[in-house]
Amino acid sequence: MKSIFLTAAFCCGLTGAALAEGWHTSPWGPEDELGAANLITPESVLAASKLVKTGKTYNLGIEVSKTTPAFSPRSMSITVLQPNQITTEGLGTNGMTYNDDIFMGWLGIGPQIDGLGHIGIKHTYYNGFAGAEVAKADGLAKLGLEKLPPIVTRGVLLDMAAFYGQDIVEEGTPYTREDIISAAEAQGVELKKGDVVLFHSGWLNLLDGENPDHERYVKVEPGLGISGAEYLAEVGVVAAGADTWGLEAVPFEKGSDGVFAVHQILIPQNGIYILENMDTRELAKDKAYEFMFVLGVTRMKGAVQMMINPTAIR
Image (tube, rainbow, N blue to C red; front, side):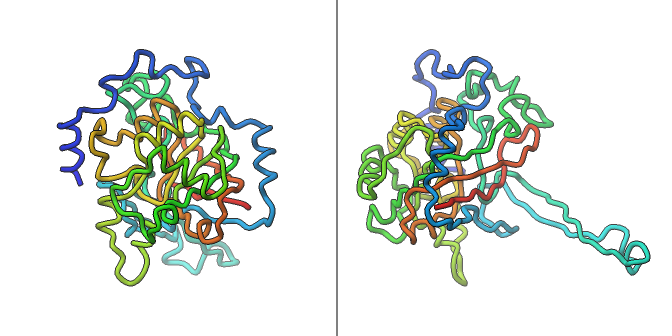
């Protein structure tokens, strides 16, 4: 996988080489650290609540374990301890016992949100913040996820597997502007400002069964293309997510600007959050194309990414 990225960077150069002056200027002011989350208002939350018709809820986060395939070198493990209890029958005369767990790993593993401090262009991040003022060894000084308010808004699922007529969309397939518009029209939905848009490709099916294909799952993927990302930015979405590990098409598009160009379009250029490894299968099965999306992110100061389990309610 590393060779794919290095080749793309060598041949094409990184995104940003031909960016217009002032590309990083935020419409919400020079101190803004929320990006597209500014689009969530009390009025938009009330509108999203009116989408709930059945009360059915959907877990959008996949189960996470030490075997969850992840972008290298990310990994995780849990150690369970029984502090001060090993040589006793418990604490106090009532014999109270308990288990605690220690998490060791990366926060950007499994179902995750990429915050605005995750991706930059030549060490310039969202709203023009320089890398030196953003990234500190003990956490982000700017753009940390602790600043993110609850994301409660209209969610839209685009079933790209159904659109292409495939059980699992072929790796490297980019969802173009035209594809997204056509898929939405076929489902009878319209993308709107402030939406969270999720793409279903069937890619998570690779992890099912007795012989899951972890290697293929995390080496390549179908996903959002460059023109598709530009279109979502024009619409004004809050976040874009998918049932894949990296949202965008890998191998990268031919003629693209290089390594993870879609991430650069969404995060530093437009302040749009990215959601990865979202379990969209039940939504696709129920043809639940429009729903209330709810996400509260753990407020860990200075965090770049965070494991999440958003909820869709229809």
